[in-house]
Length: 304
Ligand code: GLU
Image 1 (tube, rainbow, N blue to C red):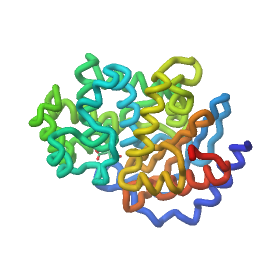
Image 2 (image 1 turned 90 degrees about the horizontal axis):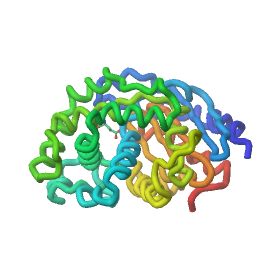
Image 3 (image 1 turned 90 degrees about the vertical axis):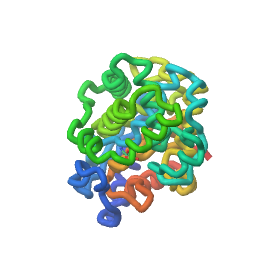
Image 4 (image 1 turned 30 degrees about the vertical axis):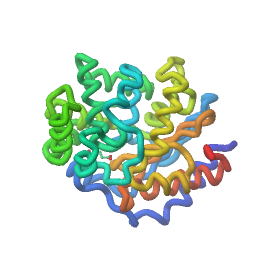
């Protein structure tokens, strides 16, 4: 399979779509990112690496961080996590307060904000310096010491994060946070503000395509069963309210973020990351979704 040729074809194919979506502006620090950026990187399990466009440029990974935080939490407390957070698609906005109230403080899944806040709480309780642990984890997985928190983005989100603070307070009132809401929110906003490139993200997601084992150095990040489960959660909950549409069009487990990134895996074959900041009405990268759809069409392979 000539992946480089495929990525170049995709990059050409998606050009006419620029200008049709909207860059996220509810986090002020994200609003200034140029909408015309496009990068895509793909890692095959046999060590092949391919990329096009702005694949080396770092951007705010936002909700894609929820997958990595989930990994860390699962590797620490295993199935106990599921006593505090569900694993069903939500069918509601990613930052919905209403659903949390209906479901008595047990978030529907770890890919919506309420669930991710519970995951952050687990990390805070398990690690002395959870922020640094998460940063080291991302640096290891991406094989890049240059991964950093964009503190401007974290600050911007902390200053405007009234809804997330409300979610955290609500979780606390239901006894589903061990730490104080402000501390949980601080960790959550920093994980969302990780700045990474498509190259780094594709590498970081490699273990999810490879039964839980990282690229060189080979380490078991998740057991085979845990990797399957994280991929299942991405498949059913990873694309906000458009998860069915993404499964229909792309056919891969994936996770998006409002910074315009989407990462996905084809288990047994490759991990991939794409970035284009203009979002569709669901908050997913418009061009990124189309690029991944072309990828599974042109390769003729998906999980289905
Ligand atoms: N940090 C963002 C928020 O909590 C994450 C949004 C996202 O990428 O889904 O609103």
